[in-house]
Image 1 (spheres, helix red, strand yellow):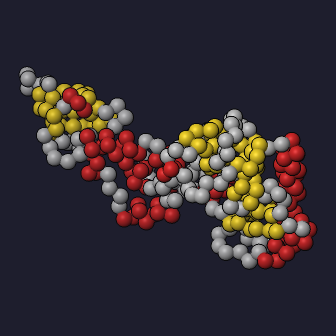
Image 2: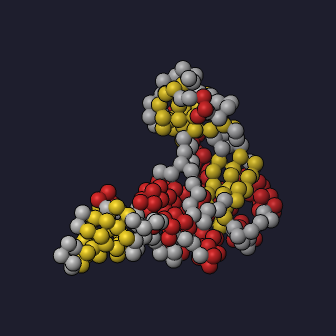
Length: 293
């Protein structure tokens, strides 16, 4: 199995595999690597390790060298240039009254190209803007349109839970999130309550979805007939988190009482489960489709 190291770049949430060429690297070591867009500076996030061939996207590019003090100085110089370029681009956008929002600016490590990330509702004719920037910066200009989730991932923000947004903090990639996940968890389908700062469904809806899907299959429906150690009864409510139900049970003396039972302690006599009731109406789907990613 090939030996690789994981390298993470600025504005990237995931690590990419590179061939270390026999050099041993430590965590956070600066390295210069060859990428599809040229030579770049990155930091080691995964030390030398062997991986299965299936985990590698061929061809595996190499680590060119360990970063030197000169490389570190060039990186700092690039950051200063980015600050100037970002301010310049913002001024030009405002001057030309373009309907776009500048999110970030980045120079390639060799300073041959400046990349400007922006959001906009539609297509933007930025040809004159590129001419303005190239005339001052004297480098190749690339305008890259991104979307709401990418915007938050790059700039960072606080989520409704009070913690940094998952995409900016630890998620390497965006995964598909659907309104069914919210429905599975019994959450309100009010967009304001299940959408993140980016306006799309919150990434965290996916974290516990598998648990809810499996547990909902085991949970009996409301009014389902069950058999317990105390007698027969009907389900009045259920707690998916605790995996318990409350049932109105007929006791041996003929009286009725509300009692709580664990799922493993009951025998469900009715067909179907709570999962059958997790349905999305056409109106809900139409209203919330735009919030899916």
